[in-house]
Amino acid sequence: MAIMERGNTQQARGQPREQSEQRQERREQQAPTPPERTLNGTLGDPRIRRWMWRVGVALAVLVVVTIAAGARLGITAAVLAVVADVVRKSRRDSSIPAWQKSSAAERRTEKQLRSLERNGYLVLHARAVPRDDEGVSDGRIDHLVIGPSGVYAIDSEKWDKRLPVRTLSHRKLFHGPFNKKDRLDEARWEADQASRIIGGQVGFEVPVQPSVAIYGPSIPWKVMRVRDVDVYAGNRARSYLRRRPKILTDTDVQRIFQAAEKALPPKYG
Image (cartoon, rainbow, N blue to C red; front, side):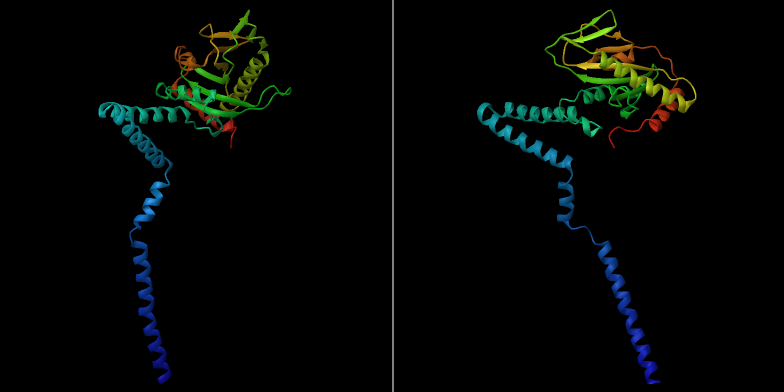
């Protein structure tokens, strides 16, 4: 009997201990996050760090210009410094990591196409297509645009601005002394591959118009079709699409976009 009582006593003592441990765990779980942990998480946000850097620069500019030219000009210079950095950062933003370089032509076209979403255009960037047998194509469409005016494969190019761009009888494109036939053939091949693959997905023909948006040299025309490829200055990419007649319904656009998104994998991961 004494043994049984002793055993019961141990069990009774164990229950409060377990309840106490459970209460302690609940208190730890419900305990507020330490201020230093919250601060570390906040400072770890790259956006917060960026704005802290901007504020620091703005304060430095404010002090220097205020001492040199007065408070009014100091405030103006500080604001302009922040605005300039915001604009510079927005120009370097891209959804494709490979296009983060400040000189990337693809990123500049991407930015233009972003504003067309409100007009019913959908865009896929850096999509893979089969390479050609001769190895001319790198197997990538920079921008596949699906919208009310049709489907377009846009390749963005950065060329040396010191060399002129000219055409010959709508069959040849030259950049200075260099014949760009291979570049046009590549654009046409990629568009044809996209047309074939997407058409197989939706069950009807989907024409894809190839085009090349050129940055750098002056282009002496608005849009020129050379070897069935539309060629134009890079900063005209948006107007190139908007000024064309509407041939697709919203349902068509959605269906083609979903098929392309499924059938054409991202080129970069």
